[in-house]
Length: 334
Image (tube, rainbow, N blue to C red; front, top):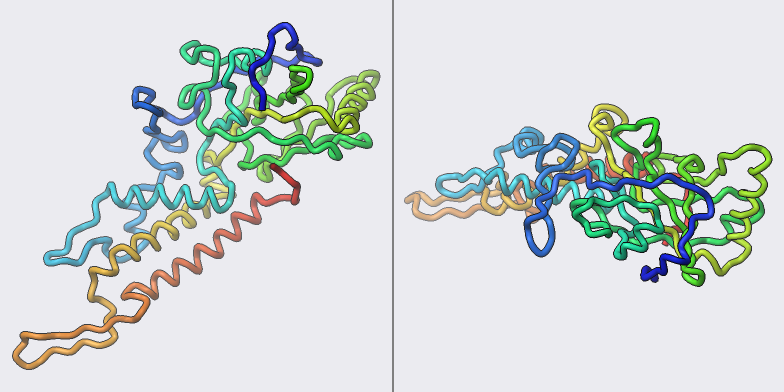
């Protein structure tokens, strides 16, 4: 996608307000070569869901420890890693972001592109979007599908991450989609869509463009969108800035089951790790009379196989629930 644009050729067809950008996660920008995350906005802690090692211990129901002589408790850092792995696994499987996230699709790499798309970046970012300062997650731009803009059909775009929502809204910031810009590579031009045109389907991650205009101007805007479809050569790409991910309120309402899904995945990882050190669950145990030799036999799948199977079934059921919550209609997205 070309981004080295000439300022003299940049113009916005319809006036749209400038958009301040800002990362929602807490980052340490002093680390090199990339910044590192230190906290997430759901609870201000080191996990996206707010789950901690004690939550995992309570959920599993058996001591999470290495069964040596003597037994050694698994460190809280290790259990925290299992929780974070489980959170990322859930996100990859469901495209459901577990904490509020500023998604840049894509981040701007040239000051001219920043100006053309109407973004206001942090003064320390040198005119381009910086990870950990202006956004949290980098994503690719979207292809433009011409048929969606034909025959007076309002354009609809399915986003890769969901749910699309903000933790707070205001009169000047009333949408989760922060910016939409169509890039015209042949003309070195951007067409920015006013936020009043956005109609969001938050859980399903859909945004529709419905021109909010008076009766006289509505046919003109509808014709413009339709022309973009009939032309079939422009625009070359769709650039978006948006916030997505579950909020603290989601975890006490419709998406409260997500914590159990994360814990089920983390429990499977924990039990598979520690079961190799445990002689509990033996199917056969022999010891000779002098007490100097013994033999223990376990199920082929391991001493914790029953618990692992139980948590696997739970994970499967909850994963399907998550799909049902956010899958929505099937639309092609590249």
